[in-house]
Image 1 (tube, helix red, strand yellow):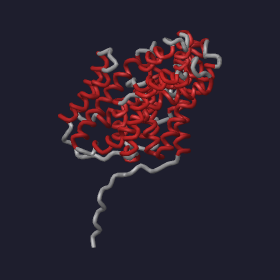
Image 2 (cartoon, one colour):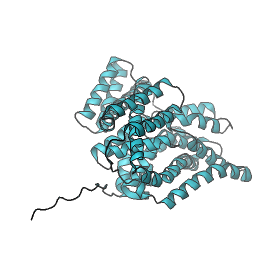
Image 3 (tube, helix red, strand yellow):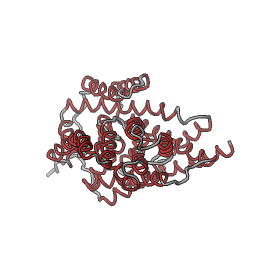
Length: 407
């Protein structure tokens, strides 16, 4: 009797533990220099290429979703990966591990820790920025091969890159993604139905509705509670929460909101704000960790309690809206039209990464032929030799210091 072939099934991601997630993200929190775009490159290398926690399509899908939502996109992606691997505790472990190193470093700076200075410090920081160029280039290269395999999606990626590069408006990213989705619905319907990792399946619809209600209630209610109680603690939490809830793209985009919220009322001086912003560029991890510094030095709630209020306040809205959207997005994307739209969105995300590789990553980092050489070597180490990113960080940092001392 001839054995019948087994039906094809979707490979489900193997479950892990919160401790495992915490360890991996803590390592990333120590080594992820270069801002949110570079972080997405580190995440892809760690969780798609090296560990296989999710596939390329799922990762691009998740990145596209988080780009749509308010909040810190790279931290939201990490939060969702932790959720996929180990449930709600895994999501909390991912956020804690990725955020804690930079938050502690900035709190130490707030207490007067000496900032890097001199030739060695300058060279070290420049070398770390060169690492970011190589990481982003690797992400663009790898994601373009997987997510833009045909003329239609490659065209969407190029168009998205041009929209972002030719427009100085922050909303251009959202417009490029939206146009990519519409183009995908028109051009990318011929592919077979695909299966994705079940990130959203870990969140029930009741939890999603509760998270969305919590997001709106805090956004509307915190200003009212501040007026009624006149509590400086509530006022500080409200300022952080509003800054995190009303910014798209995260990273540097949140800084004007934070400056208005803390420098305007006189809680933090302009000099102290700018000094903290400079220190935030020197540490790995999410730029939203800058909230720990502001909380530690602000008038309403200083010290470690203020740092904790800042971190929870600024990250909470992005995580609430992500939890609120995930269960509904998970169901919708199994329809052919929704998958066609997400193919276009994924291609647009590749275009956004390509645009960011040029500006600001390349334009703010590459200064000489030597910088190009260091970046090319780092790119080759990542893509050809498949070395861990930490080795590229060490190599680029050493090259940056050597260039500052002997260049």
